[in-house]
Image (cartoon, rainbow, N blue to C red; front, top):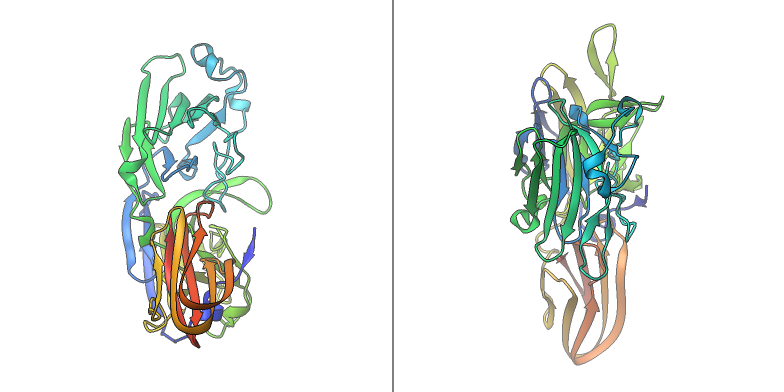
Length: 409
């Protein structure tokens, strides 16, 4: 888990706001999942009645299960996809179910992150550029039915997930396909095997910061359990402050990490005497979002009867309108969003030293250049290999500084 510092510590101006009380309920029986924006509150609450989540965007190979709602996935140990018609599930009760990583969206029951060309469920084909499925899985759906399941491929030409599933005896086979481009701008699209249907459950990825839901987590004493918790969206970083006065925390000294489960579930402890959850009053978190803000969130209560999270939130750091996207005379940054090449055009009448720095949303510097410039100059910066997401371009020229948000797709 990488330690990070938010970019805001060096380039943004602070201001103070007062804490606001808020709450989010995902319903008795954890029937919902709720996407939340620190700036705007609840963005979308949707059903938790799904089995699989397929990654969207480019070469996203991530497939997750709804493990917090009893969906279980097993890798078939007795053969590859050529065994589709002859599977033998004898001893299934002794097989070990696979788990999503509670701290990483890309480490899932099927996918292994970026272990090219083997992505866990399939192998990349250098000729077709498809990822071709090579593994059979047995899945227990949310409704408790057992099916055999295979991803036949993630197709480059059609930008689609293609898969099939059937009863264990081969009956009632269903072929499915999900076109990624129908859900551009989202992290996942969902599928219910129980209902044979694709489900569009998420808001746009840029519109939310944290997710309230039920998922599976590993307890420190061992074993996996279903928990109600909070996971952060992609491109956010979180710092945890323990044993502190939550109203007086030097948030700039914390370690900010890109773990999606840094807030997680273990801020609450079940009290076997009161049959309620105890919440630490000396624990708080700080989340750096993609809109140039750092937010403090302090959990204050959890009502398990309706799965309601109670918390206080406060913005502790932001950027002034004057500092962000303020153009400097003679400088143009384009295109934005950028895909392959970013151009920075600089025009100075007199000789000036220009400093260009580009930072990722996590605060890591990914590019830096100092150059004496007179007349017209154009910088071409290749961003083809950069991770998709939010960056900040900081340009100093002639004693003035401007910061511009950059999106790399």
